[in-house]
Image (cartoon, rainbow, N blue to C red; front, side, top):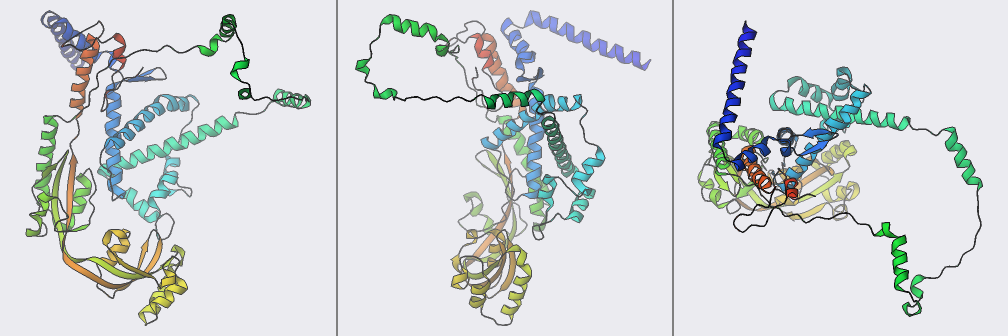
Length: 507
C-alpha cells in the first residue's frame, strides 16, 4: 500500500507539471518559450568526451569540488595561499576538464581490461607500505631528517576529520589514478613487439644501397630576368598542384561577450558570512586567531609584524589604539572583504646586524660542536672562515645590516626576535646556520594581525543569469534578429558561448 500511495503521489505531481506546461504555452510568448527550451535542452551542454555529453551542471559541480580541495590543501600545508584570481580559476577549470576526460576515457578503458587497485594496496601506497606514493613522500618527509615521518603520517590518518578527511580522500583518488595510468602505460608498452616480418623488411632495406652524384645550384642564384613563362604554364602548374593550395573553409562570426561580475546578491551573501565570522572571532583568544583564519580565509595569514604607516589606512588609523585580542569591524577592499584580529604587539627593530656560519644539512652535528666552541669564547670570524660554506665565509660570516624581509623566515625570526648578543643554531632550506646577533636599531611598536579574507566572486546563480542572457540572444539569432541597431546574429553564434567567467567565440 505504501508503494501504491507513493506512485499516486508521484503521478499527481507529474500530471500537475504537464498541465502547467500546457497552460504556459497559452500564456508565455514564443520568444520566452524558445529561450526556456534552449536552457533545458542539450544545446546547454558544454561538450562531448568519447560520445558522452558533459552537462553544465556536471562541470560546475566538479569545478566547485576542485576549488574546495584547492583551498583545503593550501590551508593545511602552505603559508601562502594564492587568491582566487583569473590564473588560478583557469587552472582549476583545466583540471576539471582533465578529470572529466579521465572519467569518460581512461576509467572506461581500465574497466574494460579489469585494471584496478585493492584497498590493501592503496593502504600500502599511502600509509603502511615500504614504497609509499611520491605524493605522500613529498608531503610527509621530515625536512630535518630527509625521510618520511611514519609516526606523524599514521597519527594524521588516525585522527583526521571534517575537511581534512575530504582532502585525504581526494589525495587517495589522485594516487589511484596515477597508479592505474602507470600500469596501463606499462601494459601498452609491453604489448608492442617486433615480429619476424618487421625484422625481414629491416634486413632487406639495409641490403639495398645506392651510389649517386649530384650538383646543387642555389635557386636564388638565378636572376628572375632569365626566366620566361606563359599564362598556360601557370595554369598547368596550378592544375597539377591544386591540392597544395586547398584551404579550409573560413567563417565570419559575430558574437557578444559577457564578463561575469558579482551581483548585489553575491556581495550580500559574503557580508552575511563576514558578520557570522566576526561574531565567532570575537570569542577567540589571540593564540587561536591564526588557526581560525586558516580555516576560514581564502588567503592564508602572513603572520608578519607591521609598524604604523605600513597597514591599510582603515586599519592603520585605529589598530595601534587597540589591545591584543581585539577584532576590528570587517571592511571592503575592492572585491575582498577583510576581518582583522590583533594577535600581538611587540617592540621590534627595523634593521639587524648579524654574522652566520652556514653548514650543509647533513653536518648538523658539526654545527653543534662549533656552537659549543663559540659559547666557550672561540673567535666567530675564525670558525666562519674554517667551516662556512657560503660566500660570507671569507669575511668571517659578516652579513651586515638587513631588514626582516631580506632573509628567509626562520632566519629573520631568530635575528629580530632575540636580544643583541644572542648565539643560536637555526635550520632553513639552505642548511644549518650558527647565528650571532651583533646589533639592532630603530625599535618601534609593531603589530601582528590575523586577517580573514573573503573574495567576492560570481555565484552559480549569477553565472546562470549570464548564461540565460547569452542563450536568449543565441536563440533569437537563429534568424536575423535585430534590436536597437545591433548587427544580425547567425545560427553559428549558438556555438559561441562559454560558461565559466567569460563568453568567448569558438569555431
